[in-house]
Image 1 (cartoon, each protein chain N blue to C red):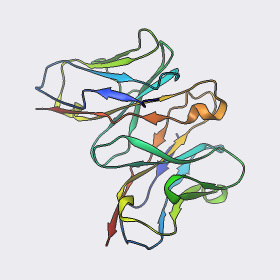
Image 2 (cartoon, each protein chain N blue to C red):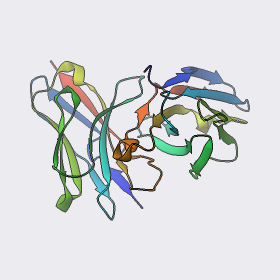
Image 3 (cartoon, each protein chain N blue to C red):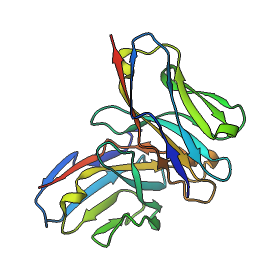
Image 4 (cartoon, rainbow over the protein chains, first blue to last red):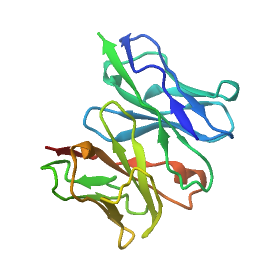
Length: 115
Length: 117
Protein backbone atom coordinates (compact mmCIF):
# COMPACT_ATOMS: atom_id res chain seq x y z
CA UNK A 1 0.00 0.00 0.00
CA UNK A 2 1.13 3.51 -0.68
CA UNK A 3 2.34 5.50 2.30
CA UNK A 4 4.05 8.75 3.17
CA UNK A 5 6.41 9.22 6.08
CA UNK A 6 7.46 12.51 7.58
CA UNK A 7 10.09 11.50 10.15
CA UNK A 8 10.13 14.79 12.03
CA UNK A 9 7.03 15.61 14.04
CA UNK A 10 8.29 18.98 15.22
CA UNK A 11 11.17 21.19 14.08
CA UNK A 12 12.32 24.51 15.49
CA UNK A 13 14.55 26.84 13.49
CA UNK A 14 15.75 30.37 14.02
CA UNK A 15 14.42 33.11 11.80
CA UNK A 16 16.76 33.55 8.86
CA UNK A 17 18.12 30.02 9.10
CA UNK A 18 17.68 27.44 6.38
CA UNK A 19 15.04 24.74 6.56
CA UNK A 20 14.68 21.21 5.29
CA UNK A 21 11.62 19.06 5.96
CA UNK A 22 11.89 15.41 5.13
CA UNK A 23 9.39 13.27 3.27
CA UNK A 24 9.67 9.66 2.15
CA UNK A 25 7.08 7.78 0.18
CA UNK A 26 6.37 4.18 -0.59
CA UNK A 27 5.02 3.51 -4.05
CA UNK A 28 5.87 1.19 -6.90
CA UNK A 29 6.05 3.80 -9.63
CA UNK A 30 6.77 7.49 -9.69
CA UNK A 31 3.86 9.14 -7.97
CA UNK A 32 2.68 12.69 -8.11
CA UNK A 33 4.06 14.48 -5.06
CA UNK A 34 2.87 17.54 -3.21
CA UNK A 35 3.67 19.74 -0.24
CA UNK A 36 0.88 21.56 1.56
CA UNK A 37 1.00 24.04 4.44
CA UNK A 38 -1.66 24.44 7.09
CA UNK A 39 -1.87 27.39 9.46
CA UNK A 40 -3.77 26.95 12.74
CA UNK A 41 -7.48 26.52 12.16
CA UNK A 42 -7.11 26.80 8.42
CA UNK A 43 -7.36 24.54 5.43
CA UNK A 44 -4.40 23.37 3.40
CA UNK A 45 -2.58 25.53 0.88
CA UNK A 46 -0.61 23.96 -1.94
CA UNK A 47 3.06 24.97 -1.81
CA UNK A 48 4.41 23.00 -4.74
CA UNK A 49 4.03 19.83 -6.78
CA UNK A 50 6.08 17.33 -8.74
CA UNK A 51 4.74 15.37 -11.67
CA UNK A 52 7.78 14.61 -13.81
CA UNK A 53 10.79 16.24 -15.43
CA UNK A 54 13.14 18.52 -13.52
CA UNK A 55 13.58 16.99 -10.09
CA UNK A 56 13.96 20.38 -8.40
CA UNK A 57 10.65 22.19 -8.26
CA UNK A 58 9.93 25.70 -7.13
CA UNK A 59 6.87 26.70 -5.20
CA UNK A 60 5.27 29.67 -3.58
CA UNK A 61 6.66 31.63 -0.63
CA UNK A 62 10.26 30.82 -1.59
CA UNK A 63 9.97 27.06 -1.04
CA UNK A 64 11.52 24.40 -3.22
CA UNK A 65 11.58 20.61 -3.13
CA UNK A 66 13.79 17.97 -4.67
CA UNK A 67 12.58 14.60 -5.88
CA UNK A 68 15.11 11.80 -5.43
CA UNK A 69 13.90 8.56 -6.92
CA UNK A 70 16.76 6.49 -5.50
CA UNK A 71 15.86 7.58 -1.97
CA UNK A 72 12.07 7.73 -2.49
CA UNK A 73 12.23 11.20 -1.03
CA UNK A 74 10.73 14.59 -1.72
CA UNK A 75 12.26 16.98 0.80
CA UNK A 76 11.09 20.55 1.19
CA UNK A 77 13.61 23.35 1.59
CA UNK A 78 13.78 27.06 2.15
CA UNK A 79 17.03 29.03 2.33
CA UNK A 80 15.87 31.60 4.88
CA UNK A 81 12.89 31.06 7.14
CA UNK A 82 10.55 33.89 8.13
CA UNK A 83 8.48 33.98 11.30
CA UNK A 84 5.34 33.73 9.17
CA UNK A 85 6.45 30.28 7.98
CA UNK A 86 5.51 28.78 11.35
CA UNK A 87 2.81 26.27 10.49
CA UNK A 88 2.19 22.57 9.88
CA UNK A 89 3.60 21.10 6.69
CA UNK A 90 2.22 18.02 4.97
CA UNK A 91 3.75 15.91 2.25
CA UNK A 92 1.26 14.05 0.08
CA UNK A 93 1.23 11.58 -2.77
CA UNK A 94 -1.37 10.94 -5.43
CA UNK A 95 -0.91 7.24 -6.16
CA UNK A 96 -1.24 7.62 -9.88
CA UNK A 97 -3.29 7.94 -12.98
CA UNK A 98 -6.82 6.55 -12.82
CA UNK A 99 -6.59 6.23 -9.06
CA UNK A 100 -9.14 8.98 -8.65
CA UNK A 101 -6.67 11.60 -7.63
CA UNK A 102 -7.12 11.05 -3.89
CA UNK A 103 -4.19 12.20 -1.82
CA UNK A 104 -2.35 10.19 0.82
CA UNK A 105 -0.80 12.44 3.43
CA UNK A 106 2.04 12.09 5.87
CA UNK A 107 1.36 12.89 9.51
CA UNK A 108 2.85 16.34 9.18
CA UNK A 109 5.78 18.33 10.54
CA UNK A 110 5.09 21.26 12.80
CA UNK A 111 7.51 24.11 12.23
CA UNK A 112 8.27 26.63 14.97
CA UNK A 113 10.38 29.72 14.24
CA UNK A 114 12.49 31.35 16.95
CA UNK A 115 13.07 35.10 16.73
CA UNK B 1 -12.97 32.50 -7.96
CA UNK B 2 -13.92 32.52 -4.31
CA UNK B 3 -12.22 29.27 -3.40
CA UNK B 4 -13.70 26.28 -1.63
CA UNK B 5 -16.09 27.15 1.17
CA UNK B 6 -17.38 24.99 3.98
CA UNK B 7 -20.19 25.51 6.44
CA UNK B 8 -20.42 25.53 9.32
CA UNK B 9 -16.85 26.20 10.41
CA UNK B 10 -17.49 24.75 13.85
CA UNK B 11 -20.10 22.33 15.11
CA UNK B 12 -20.58 21.09 18.65
CA UNK B 13 -23.06 18.29 19.08
CA UNK B 14 -24.03 15.72 21.62
CA UNK B 15 -23.34 12.07 21.12
CA UNK B 16 -26.10 10.37 19.21
CA UNK B 17 -27.18 13.44 17.26
CA UNK B 18 -27.01 13.76 13.49
CA UNK B 19 -24.93 16.47 11.83
CA UNK B 20 -24.61 17.69 8.26
CA UNK B 21 -21.78 19.67 6.69
CA UNK B 22 -21.80 21.50 3.42
CA UNK B 23 -19.01 22.09 0.91
CA UNK B 24 -19.13 24.46 -2.05
CA UNK B 25 -16.26 23.76 -4.46
CA UNK B 26 -14.60 26.12 -6.89
CA UNK B 27 -17.24 26.67 -9.55
CA UNK B 28 -15.60 25.01 -12.55
CA UNK B 29 -14.25 22.05 -10.58
CA UNK B 30 -16.01 18.76 -11.25
CA UNK B 31 -14.18 16.64 -8.65
CA UNK B 32 -14.92 17.01 -4.98
CA UNK B 33 -13.18 15.21 -2.11
CA UNK B 34 -13.86 14.77 1.59
CA UNK B 35 -11.09 14.15 4.09
CA UNK B 36 -11.00 13.78 7.85
CA UNK B 37 -8.18 15.13 9.98
CA UNK B 38 -7.72 14.26 13.63
CA UNK B 39 -5.40 16.09 15.98
CA UNK B 40 -1.74 15.61 15.15
CA UNK B 41 -2.44 13.65 11.98
CA UNK B 42 -2.55 14.32 8.29
CA UNK B 43 -5.85 14.32 6.44
CA UNK B 44 -7.31 10.92 5.58
CA UNK B 45 -9.33 10.35 2.44
CA UNK B 46 -13.03 9.60 2.95
CA UNK B 47 -14.74 9.80 -0.42
CA UNK B 48 -14.84 11.64 -3.72
CA UNK B 49 -17.25 12.64 -6.44
CA UNK B 50 -16.86 13.31 -10.09
CA UNK B 51 -19.78 15.51 -10.96
CA UNK B 52 -22.70 13.89 -9.11
CA UNK B 53 -21.27 10.36 -9.09
CA UNK B 54 -19.65 9.08 -5.93
CA UNK B 55 -16.76 7.07 -7.31
CA UNK B 56 -14.87 5.88 -4.26
CA UNK B 57 -15.44 5.47 -0.54
CA UNK B 58 -12.79 4.73 2.05
CA UNK B 59 -13.20 2.01 4.66
CA UNK B 60 -13.13 4.90 7.13
CA UNK B 61 -16.57 5.87 5.86
CA UNK B 62 -18.78 3.71 8.06
CA UNK B 63 -22.47 3.22 7.37
CA UNK B 64 -23.20 6.15 9.70
CA UNK B 65 -21.60 8.45 7.15
CA UNK B 66 -23.24 9.47 3.90
CA UNK B 67 -22.19 11.98 1.31
CA UNK B 68 -24.11 13.44 -1.58
CA UNK B 69 -23.52 15.79 -4.45
CA UNK B 70 -26.96 15.89 -6.04
CA UNK B 71 -26.42 18.38 -8.84
CA UNK B 72 -22.70 18.06 -9.25
CA UNK B 73 -22.11 21.34 -7.48
CA UNK B 74 -22.15 21.53 -3.68
CA UNK B 75 -21.81 18.45 -1.51
CA UNK B 76 -23.08 17.45 1.90
CA UNK B 77 -21.56 15.04 4.40
CA UNK B 78 -23.92 13.66 7.02
CA UNK B 79 -22.95 11.76 10.13
CA UNK B 80 -25.74 9.91 11.88
CA UNK B 81 -25.70 8.91 15.56
CA UNK B 82 -22.44 10.76 16.20
CA UNK B 83 -19.83 9.23 18.46
CA UNK B 84 -17.00 10.92 20.33
CA UNK B 85 -14.57 9.30 17.93
CA UNK B 86 -16.10 11.35 15.13
CA UNK B 87 -14.60 14.52 16.61
CA UNK B 88 -12.25 15.82 13.94
CA UNK B 89 -11.75 18.43 11.26
CA UNK B 90 -13.64 17.56 8.08
CA UNK B 91 -11.97 18.99 5.01
CA UNK B 92 -13.36 19.39 1.55
CA UNK B 93 -11.25 19.82 -1.57
CA UNK B 94 -11.97 20.23 -5.25
CA UNK B 95 -10.12 19.80 -8.52
CA UNK B 96 -10.80 19.91 -12.22
CA UNK B 97 -10.87 16.58 -13.98
CA UNK B 98 -9.90 16.97 -17.59
CA UNK B 99 -6.99 19.23 -16.90
CA UNK B 100 -4.46 16.43 -17.27
CA UNK B 101 -2.02 16.52 -14.43
CA UNK B 102 -3.68 19.66 -13.16
CA UNK B 103 -6.59 17.50 -12.07
CA UNK B 104 -4.39 16.24 -9.29
CA UNK B 105 -4.10 19.71 -7.80
CA UNK B 106 -6.64 19.86 -5.03
CA UNK B 107 -7.77 23.09 -3.44
CA UNK B 108 -8.94 22.82 0.13
CA UNK B 109 -11.59 24.62 2.08
CA UNK B 110 -11.08 25.86 5.65
CA UNK B 111 -12.72 22.78 7.13
CA UNK B 112 -15.51 22.09 9.58
CA UNK B 113 -14.37 21.27 13.09
CA UNK B 114 -16.72 18.82 14.75
CA UNK B 115 -16.75 18.29 18.50
CA UNK B 116 -18.92 15.51 19.87
CA UNK B 117 -19.59 15.79 23.60
